[in-house]
Length: 145
Figure 1: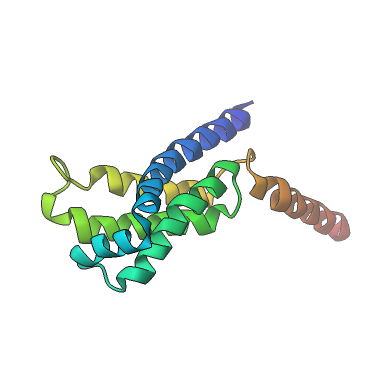
Figure 2 (figure 1 turned 180 degrees about the horizontal axis):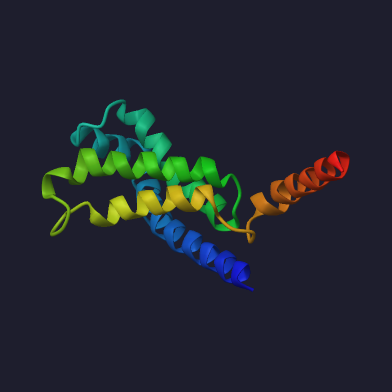
């Protein structure tokens, strides 16, 4: 029973983190690649056009994938890269807490990374890969016996 609670908690966590990233991604989508590139260039982010495309893709497409639980490790890594980039290039001067602080960005980036590494059994990754892996483990155990 406890594993079901863990799986539901992971699903709720994935949805919560993804909704926040998706909201920020849709803002960037509305600005377009040009507007997002200008914003990134103004903050000193290297390769602003490539960075804009990466961030929009991670925050929009990645968030949809994160909610359904597909490619979780890849999206989690994308969240970590995006979030840590925002910490260092946008929020670092404001400090950890207070107006413009990086506490929320840091927590979201690391929560995304953690949930990407273990998104629970209520995910497409588990349904597609987890069951296959479990079947392979059972076959190996049978062959060893």
